[in-house]
Length: 274
Image 1 (spheres, rainbow, N blue to C red):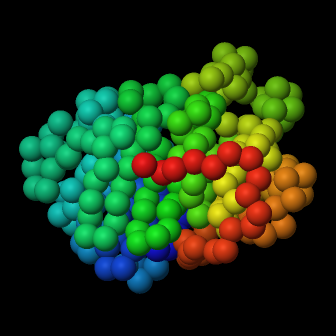
Image 2: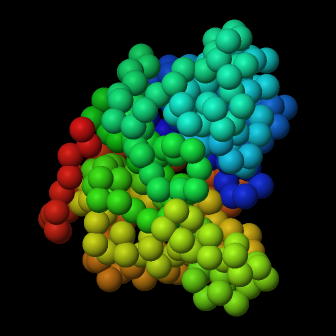
């Protein structure tokens, strides 16, 4: 299994995941033409996708999803809350349509198993995901205000983790956002901070994880090097020199392989995926 983040942040989010001959898109926060361009730049034809999964209905995650799905004949999958709040009822009745999914349900797509996770965000029934192919697992969670026990545990069992590192607490506090927006971002249903991610890396990261990708960075209240330094310091405190760290910019990442490595000596609790 491998992934390639095509875009990340408030200007748009989309991630390509590939397992064997099965490819899915996670979120479609760019226009349909741009989504197609990014996919073809990764040598993937848009109509070869098995599905477009949606995390939630905010515009930076669904902007081009409906038009893209209808143009290329790809089904859309997301929670019922996302379907209703994102205006996908019409899509549900056309072409491949919109297929409702729910947290805890495992979807099987020709060698790729997808397990949605309920996450805390100010959206209608938002989801994170664990993707599993063969003996490897990829955890993906952005746009969430905190890490509940079940979500943290699911991510802890993954070989590669994509996790939101949205803002630096001091930059948010001293930055230009109006106070109500600052409160929303920092709330339990807002966005994870660099400090939240550091805490997860120190306390919960599973021993088999080989790569952590920081995603959905704010262009106003964070900086790639600030987020990287915070995560690197956390990994150093945890004694995890074996973990590779990547930072997704608004332009995404290169291809990243999800593989199984020999786990170092276990530290702390370990969790099962499902």
